[in-house]
Length: 75
Image (tube, rainbow, N blue to C red; front, top):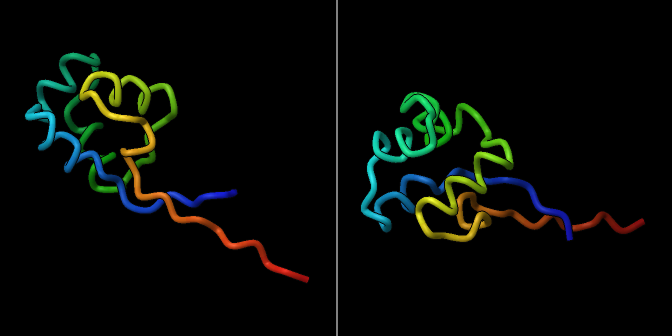
């Protein structure tokens, strides 16, 4: 099944993990602005960064975005 990415759920996952943008950025050696851009849907997380974020906050990588199933068009 194909999926389209919906909105980023990083803010919610950070609240659940009780981490801040600043602490996550420091842990991953990223600028806090970059993390904020992901949260504001200004940038899509590259897979390597998404995996690192998920590992750092203790969630599944698929939990970082809303996943919208794409329904195949029948001919």
